[in-house]
Length: 210
Length: 210
DNA sequence: CCGGTTTGCGTGACGTTGTAAATTTATGCC
DNA sequence: GGCATAAATTTACAACGTCACGCAAACCGG
Image 1 (cartoon, each protein chain N blue to C red):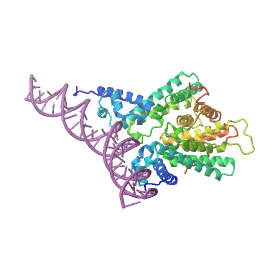
Image 2 (image 1 turned 90 degrees about the vertical axis):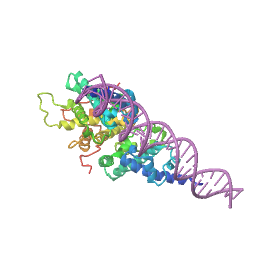
Image 3 (image 1 turned 120 degrees about the vertical axis):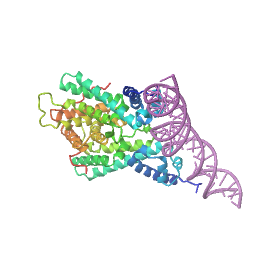
Image 4 (image 1 turned 135 degrees about the vertical axis):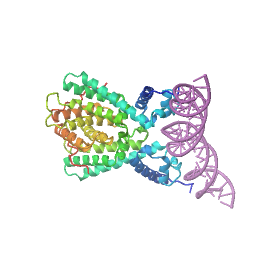
């Protein structure tokens, strides 16, 4: 039925394709996934996706935005499970590491995909911003207390980098055997915890990431 | 002169091609460099490199090994310029960050290239091992002193990750404006320095990375 | 109710990639 | 000096992202 194609039809198809793209990209990496596979997965001819997206790049951006949101949800769920601020921070750190190590390609899709002009995809920028805010949740001052002194923006990024560094090294095969990412993160965050201003809490305990 | 082709001829050609590959890969990334460009750069026809290398992957491995060595040399030079151990560590950290930020694609070529079977390329493994040792130079105990207590292997990796994390975030465009990699690294290493066992020295002062 | 226009989709094709196979070229040896 | 042979080039192929055409189905003015 060629003629119609309501806005919701369009949205429906986009959703279906983005879902498939996120799954495939997060499993094999974007380079390894072909437009033809993608089209095949949702049961259309190779060129049909081009009616709904400009090109592969745009599909990638949409899939990455989805990845961001899924990741943010994971962290928020962990955050919600905590009762004290310290516990929240610990749970979020654990969730972060577990997500990255269990879904390496999804993690790379989010944080290690070179997409030169991310600005061209506002949804992606928005999703990234949300994830960034989520990740610094634990460094927000408790409601009612003024976070004096410490530069919370900086501290948030410090903890973030302290997780990201070991994770990236391990995903690249540079951390092995006894000195794996969890171990390094444990040492790193403990050191930060003992010496960074009190506003910051530890991000990860030495617990195994299953 | 088709008939001969001494071992040194072979080595000569391999050198020339690896040189070109390292330059091109480190400038544009491996995906963006084509076999035909590569062949063109060294002035041969597209298929000639295949007589000297199995495939692009093998050339990439060789170029990465070169990158490792160049990187290690850079760090060693910085190390040699220091007079005290603290100064050596600081200079190496600065050199590390400067290298990564000035040659992002070279840095990625080394530490962020997914080459599933690195084990198939012994030179690459060797170069990686050398670089790894170089990077933990500053954490070695001073000759004559026994580095008791602290797990130096772990501490080396902790500092490494503390540089790698912020750098990767910045290269992915996730650190901006006032909170750039140098800033985050500065905070991170200072925190480590004040709380990690005394065997570890700071890896980077807050100096700008030019 | 009906033909023309419009619109969604599939098909086929193009240029580019990495690389295999065939072909040309140029030497060393008898 | 001609031939075997090894190096290099040329040609060829499958797969990729994407362009351009063409078919077919639905809406719409008469």
